[in-house]
Image (cartoon, rainbow, N blue to C red; front, side, top):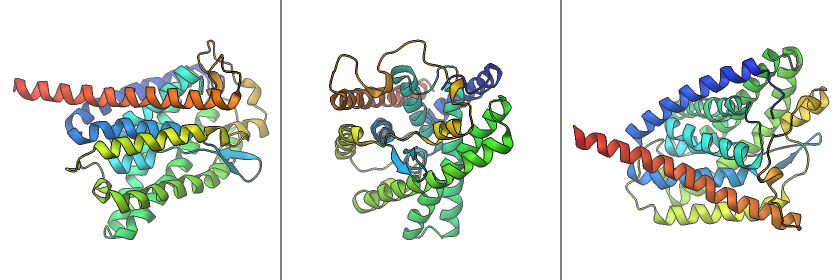
Length: 311
């Protein structure tokens, strides 16, 4: 949320994130295959819905899917940056989940650190395992776990640089709880890879466009995203890792409420039943995130086609 980071640190990470997003847009337009365009939308929608389902972690806290590893494995790093940016931005702008001033840092931690750590670890381990089939699952698990762990360290350093919590407190606290949360991330990612290995093995060549038709994948992915949205009321009510650390170490009260509300706390205003309000919010979010990520991918492909025609 806003309030955890100083204005200076927030602005610095806004600048870094904007520069990286600009590079990602250019790189994606050069490397994205036509059949990967709908996959960007589907992954964004599924990751958004998956992030609504917090799972309980020992000690009275909870974690949720990050999704950077699976996005990176299926799309490559630069499109994955755009997918994760779409998810994090819609969460902040529409659902008041994460501050507007802090959005640059949140994008940096989840869409940049999460993606490139996943990419480096996955590629390294796949090379070490000689790209054996079993290596996909080991590499995917470790890429997912490491993405959570290193992103939490980045967040801890930002808190320390902001003067919110000393480094000798923030770093061990964030690292400890997210080392456990990362196991959940790794298991979810591995489960997704096992499923894809069984039904669409062609998608697991990192960043390579598949020649197979994608209509079934799009429909299936959106159905999964909608199912996750419907199940979202089952999410753990325990605070997530960062909120738990803030509560334990006395800086939770520095968090600032959003200066506007659209669909706060993932409950659509005007729906009295909280379960239905959450489900409605999830479905709305899935539709919007899919549209944003798909629209970005489609626009980038159109730019590439126009540039190619002008040469």
